[in-house]
Length: 277
Image 1: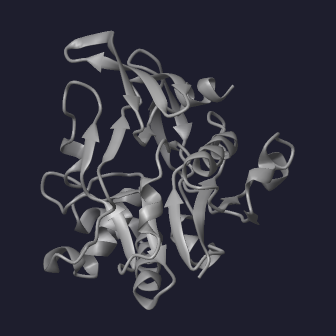
Image 2: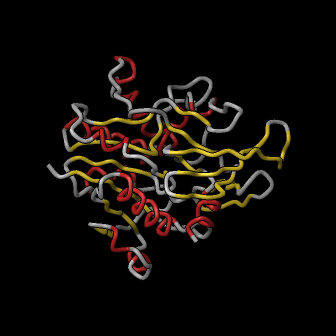
């Protein structure tokens, strides 16, 4: 059976997800036994002009329906911009993946160990992260525990393992259905988010398929470690990363901390791009 990692990258006017994807793929190969990595992108012409694009075994060119999604994107606590949020196409990953077993990642999930390789060969059809941990000194998990105070459990779509199976196909088809009817499901599940968000869509899909009520949702090994977009990634050296994380009740003040051998979801994409440069 073929197995590999899959990234999705669609640039907007503010962030270069394609460049992030190259960097992410290089780290996957570095720490995950030179695993196969492929990319789905609507910016393939741009990708092939960049140094390092050869890191991908498959470049899957696609077009995406760009929704009117806008969000406030922070670069530290004191700087922000409203940007177009192109997060479409994740529901198509099942059909577009060239692998029998796939680990689908966001381009800002920085791999520093081989833990995800243990997913391959799993008895589970798919796995997502349920538990998460903010790496700063102040725990910030409320918004990543439930989709809203009155709604369902929150599951991350940042990293998803899935194999080609009827059950996985049904999950991704359900997510596509939710995306196409987002106004309805946003209201039904009392999420109250004008923007479509993949985390919400996969959480709803899991609930609709009754996996959460029967306790059958398999989770990825470990936790989803992350920094907020109001924090900074300062340096990467092999498997070590240095961050500046915000101090509670002290806007614009930061604490220096480091990680070693830890995969981290870097929500401040601008600070990641400065590291890549």
